[in-house]
Length: 328
Image 1: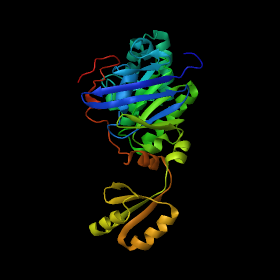
Image 2: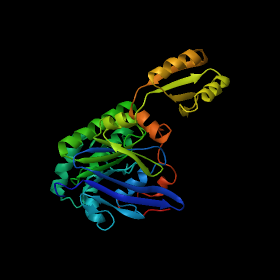
Image 3: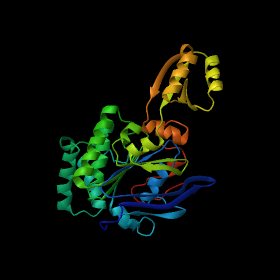
């Protein structure tokens, strides 16, 4: 990869499933040595795009490159530079941690002496050395994720794709996982592209790309996105259905979202005072959310992020094992 080439290039990528347009003319570049987040709700198209980048799925139009190699015309070259952690577990849990890593290195043609060295290094990196010879079936969800990250590094990858790496993990394991990712990115000069439903996880990413319904809605640093699109909102829980209807009828233009029993209203400081005077006694609870990536997403899509996995359409592809055929 030349020094001025992006680690990942996506140019006018579109993908359709029947009549459903999963990706609609998506374009972006990911510079080297960055952590780049794809943020979007269920069905946004994130997993479809990840499948294209890791050569499992071909786009209908447009091109994508990994380290300068076209994922359709040069899939082996592109794949050899990728480390991938899929959304679905992909370890052989009958094998030990060491055996899983050794098998992966063998598939990628890493010579045996170098495999032994790298296995020791990555097991130490993810703090699994003492578990090296234990079957993976006995590992916790967090340990399995760490082992999958270690596996993605065996062949000295330049770019790491992480598809919902913290899905299903508790808060402590999620924080620990991100510690590993940031440490890897710094120490190994990796480029990391990660998809997630947890908005708080992308606050420290270099760039955040928000997509929904297959369209790219915004791309910038977290700080710039908050300045450009973020807004203060008032979140309240009306006491009765009548109170709810009265608030909606009084402020139809300010209603940003209905979240279960809550109403979310666009709110500057002056509006908050007015609302309290008019409806303060008719709500059970009230809070003010300052500009954040959550409010950025809300202002761009009209809905909140949901902690859900990929939809049925995005799950129709079989991961296979690095080169398996997809199914419909």
